[in-house]
Image (cartoon, rainbow, N blue to C red; front, side, top):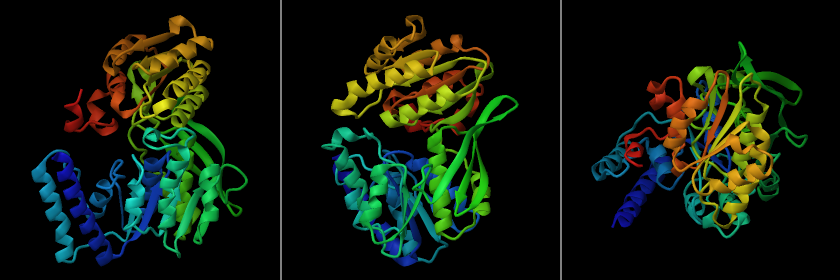
Length: 430
């Protein structure tokens, strides 16, 4: 019954969104891919917000219901039927009377199952499509036959791109870059390698008074070069997200200086390699929104490079929705973890394979701890942390690894502002 009701409500919201797009005709930027969608979407918004009237998807509103909610300017009503009826009514209002509507929409589009994006592409026609990156083993792959099916699904947003539109590609990702040959639209490519038209170089962690505060790099386009500093986030993925945003800004004829200034105000999404002050003057790298093999690899590589007089901790929860790839991917992650941290703490049944692999690859038995729950791990970790330690926390959504961060953050009163899944609906869940 609930499923039928959801389909009914979704169909109404989609139809309202279609009518609204026809009435106000905003320009549409779509961000898709397997890695970095939300960060790229938020970075694009930061670049554009001072120049045009723009609205972005909130959080990770990237589904068949989240996208129309963004277009209509409505919130997630969760399991409240009355609130969903109110959303339908609110969505109808701008159709019957003229309102001030954004000139640009920045929408994140994702897929949990085959057909998700194909259905959206039938009615959503972007002016700009940004293709971020495809993972070797993408998140949600258990619902697809193979990796190529995931890539094909994301490709529907390339096919739906307006002929006069712009396709923005990560040229460092072979699969993303291959879409250059599959469109008649203009293509702009970003990355770190020579194939990119918009390149980043001299990438470094940004320190202030000895503490890790963010990252910095230089961006080059056709001989024009400007420095960029992004605060409160680390990792190469943040560079790629910024490059995607820079490329969109250039496609809209903004200059590099304007774009760099916009990125200086960029606030990284919660739970995506976000820097948070920890207890005892430690530093937390909060990557608790979700986890996948490629994202975990990047996070561990980033942790290993952080300069500190303290120790490196990796607190890792299970990676879910990997299907038959689960054991192999957790073991491969364990190999890298052994090289990246001084202490490994795992949460969940699947991560036992990760812990065993780390032990097999040289991490001391005394430095590997395993727990069943994130809360249990966080409470134990409180007593281990020392000054200047750096703690990476990561895991799939259902592992609730934000509970670890809550236990070890310096100002837990700011959890609602800094951490993922702080809504009442999430707190009710175990």
